[in-house]
Amino acid sequence: MKTQVSINTSYNSRYQPDVIIRLPEGKDVIVDAKMSLVAYERYFNSEDPDEQTQAIKNHVASIRNHMRMLSHKDYHQLPGIRSLDYVLMFIPIEPAYLLALKESPELLDEGIKQNIMLVCPSTLLVAVRTINNLWRYERQGQNAQEIAAKAAKMYDKLRLFVDDMQLLGASLDKADNAYQSAMKRLAEGRGNLISQAESFKEMGVEVKQPISPQLVEKSDKPYCAES
Image (cartoon, rainbow, N blue to C red; front, side, top):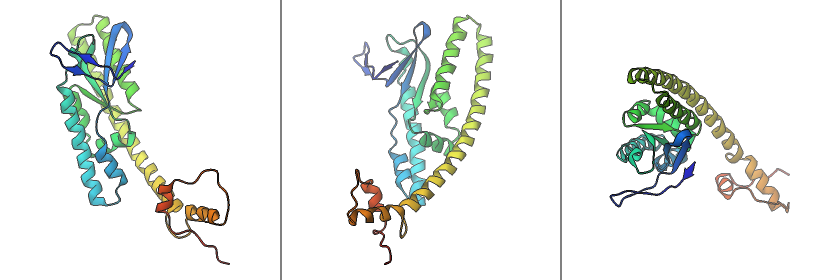
């Protein structure tokens, strides 16, 4: 595997794929991880439902725009690259990937039509194995009709996988709600745990390392025990 590779073309252009995964027999898989997650960060950090709704729409639009940009790069035609037409568009934050698919499940189909496979940390290895299998089919010299049949089966399996990922997304949403609830108990409301812990410092208790200033700022005033 190579990262941050720089490739110069005969047209004095330079391409910089984030990762090139080297498969057996000199085959390559291009991975792009340059998509902006600004809209997702805005969604994650906001507590305003209207702002969150708009941020989700912007997040999906950002993915679509990046897919269109990647579809015109033709990484597979670069000198020294022996890749399939497909490029893996890597979204490094799993909840950002799941949120986009929950809002717009058709993104996977749209990407495939543009030779882009959307992947996240939990699906990257599956995608690479799938591509490696496609290379193996080519090495076996199967005819075009058989390859088409196998591709149809792969597509059906991908659809089942998407269904499983959506179920996983629902589970992650529940986990996120539980996390938010726990954080509120930790840093919000009168007598929350952080404010109580900070009050010990005011009483002269020495600590090796302070609690995150951001969490301290979110907590209420230091807890004062009744005498």
